[in-house]
Image (spheres, rainbow, N blue to C red):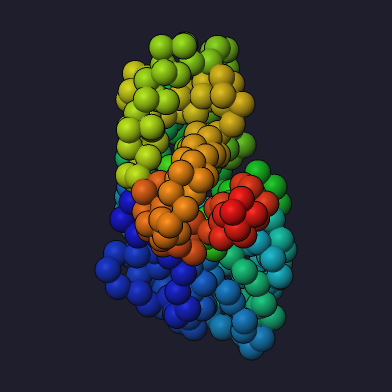
Length: 311
């Protein structure tokens, strides 16, 4: 994963991160709450607090789909795009979309909201379409702008991004990749002219389950990618995620987290003098804080308290 973290600042970032990377936003700058990139999916979460009327111009690059979801608050909004105009207020759950190469003029006021931006490279998105609807021709694929309509499914992906962002740990790579695949499938299913095929039933074979288990056990301290696990099973990432959950009862990320915490508990018991930071690094966390958060969520107690209860 290239980068994932929290930061307070403005929209004008450098280094290829969301915002400066993609939209060329000219005008009052919303505050950046956090930003993240996996190999394919870029996302940023912003807070807008602007009571007076403001006007901005936006230019989406020719190789990127842009999706915006309002997570909380509201904005009075008037957006003029290439072939449409959106004037209804933004409310929680409202979703908008921008197409590759599209320009927009946006006037807004009474803005006090938290929003998430997703940046989807067109080439990556079309790869997901090939998996979801193999018979679809790329030249015929159209995403349909919801134009401020409420979409719980898309906005839920925004909340998942915020949740991962708040943990701010590089071990979330597999989770971010999974969110990206799920978002692509949601856009195809709910906001496109494509009818996805019905996925084949069936989970992982016992041999595939063993391959994944052995690989994770041997690489638990490393940054494990969804594509790596899918390749081990000789499946596409979409098919792997669906088959894995059917067989294991958990998403790949939730299962991987459980494996990391189970190994940490073994180390805590077997090595009473081993520091928690050392244990965190051994099971794939880059900081003691991130490890402590994951441990607390999974076990219900902080690792130090859990260790003392066994002394």
